[in-house]
Length: 376
Image (tube, rainbow, N blue to C red; front, side, top):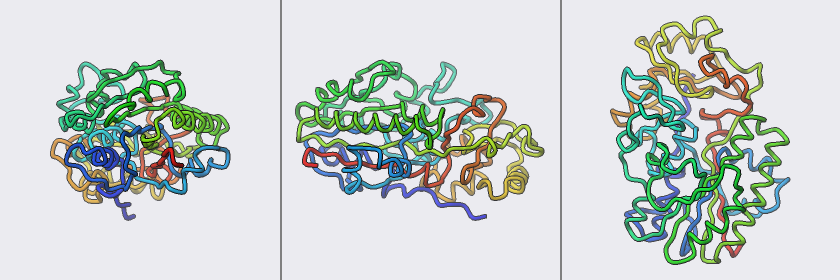
């Protein structure tokens, strides 16, 4: 089975969003590969878990977003299609092969234990060491742009924030604060001069994992976010461009499509460590060829199975993969197809989730770039 090609890094992915904004603000040596409108200041709202396909499917229930779709377009999340990887790609403007955040969980060094960037621990490598490249927030700030992050207070100073989105001011709010509740802080952040505000919204992803993207609760949450985006646009000055994107889409996985790694004969054999997440597994092993061949035979059409070298050659992680990144990748990669997923009993909560992401299906890799200007 041939492997799918990686995203079009450099042409239309999350890596090109902040360089496009910086270019329009005259900051850094950047170019606008996305063709965004010129504005005095920009607000980028990232809605965790909002995929292009799911947004279009639910658009008939929305009021504000449908008016934006005609002048908006899909871009690609990186591989793996998971939050830590996507936010670092967004913040640095680099593909995962360069920035090195390569999964929900992964081994940061050869022979080490797994780390989870969303829950960076004191025994994990320092963020600036694991991801040393400057972020576009830092680069814009150095060139005189007022940069502000508006997000959950608990993310202030977190390992992932320091690795992926360091730079500028940080305005923290409670976990339940809606986009509309944060609108005044966003307006103040871009009120004068060249300015950029990054706003994170996580509730849609939480709902998708728990209920699925085909559920009523998910559509209700999307409807609320649609109204919040309209309210946010209404508070912003006319010379501010609002952009809305997502970090990944999502696939609903029925119970009958959950593959129990430990309960399936042959899948655990010669595997030393299991990383990643159900839709994209990193398998660490001293026998990659044997493990890849066995998994490919067992999984059949349910997954793309390859060695790390094959995944790199297919461009999954970008055109350039640093040596330090290579050793973080699983020796074998398992990317689920259609609505299958591989669960591990070492993370029992995975079996209770409905919505998943991480692989290369269009439903999870395509995310929107909505352009919302005062001119409509």
